[in-house]
Image (cartoon, rainbow, N blue to C red; front, side, top):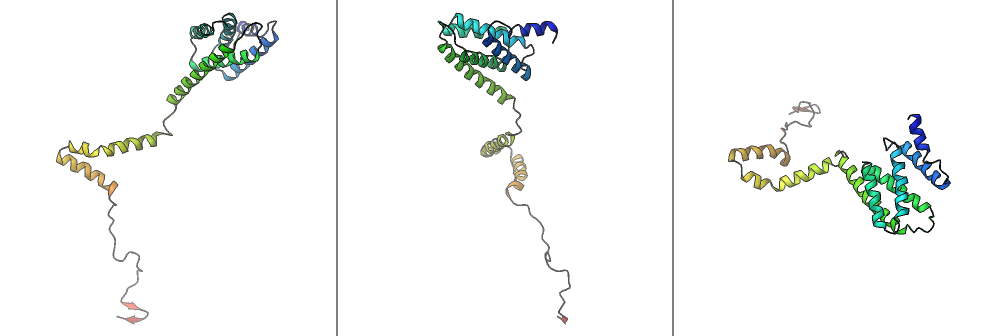
Amino acid sequence: MNTKEIQALESYFKTENEHWNDNAFEMICEVLQKGNFENPEIPLKIFSKAIDVFTEHFETPLKAIQLFESETDKQKIDSVQKLFVFEWVLKYIRRTEFEKVDLDEIKDLLKSQIERLKVEVNKRSEYNKPLVGNIRDTLKDLMKKELEDLPETLKDLEPVQRLNVLCKLIPYVLPKVVSVRANHGEPEDDYTSFSGYSW
């Protein structure tokens, strides 16, 4: 970060409001630690704007949430980043007492938006998760379905093709035939003499 960027960040937590400064500083520390924003000033901008919107439009909570949503959309942040900012805004509102402003309805709306975003984020991470853990179960289900449909599939084949498929499947159904020798497990000695006696 260059000097100008550092000064821009510092301006968010060097105000006359100590409570605001503490929260903004805590937030920027988390942003820098997680590295979840390319430009660490973006979440602070949204955070600052959100508080302004909510205190200005507290009498129309739905409109306030809608304005906040549009602000996050303008910044072109993804759902993980959006969730981070929403959680921080809710945290700040819970920790703060506002004079002549009741933000209870906004808190409830924020909670529901956070839950929606969590579902969205979880779906996305589930989609990106590698299949290694589930691939065996997926293949089992696929094979089970194919085996159930096998009679129907074989019915459409020519007799020679059907026999070919059945021959390939036989080793999985019937045990493999192994040749057994008559003296298997017997001693190698000649049985013509036993304990010195001749037969």
